[in-house]
Image 1 (cartoon, one colour):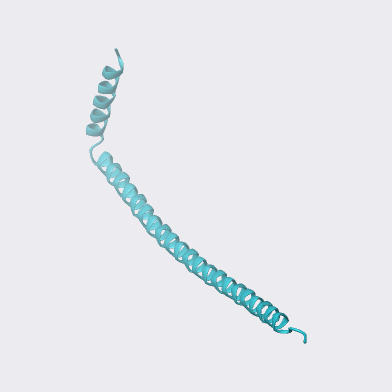
Image 2 (image 1 turned 135 degrees about the horizontal axis):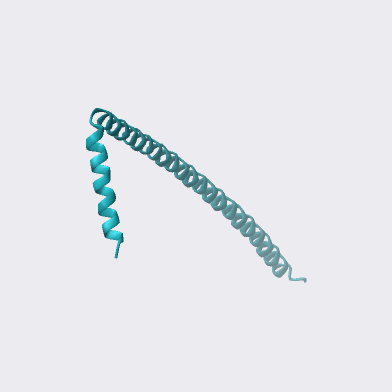
Length: 103
């Protein structure tokens, strides 16, 4: 009489091990896919935030440029209205700078 129960147990163990390996491979693939999806979503969120920041910065730069042009235009109008005052102010500033640098 031959004992086949050992061979049957080994075959069952081998098939269980193969099934376990397949399950681990499927689980690994599922986790990798989930991580890729999360990384893609995070990348899209970062790109969206960068685009928003770029838009805010562009608007702020445009506002600053407009303000600088307005100040320059206002200064030009004041100089045209009263050129003598502008010359005297410029001379005073020049003398003050000259006195500060003359050590």
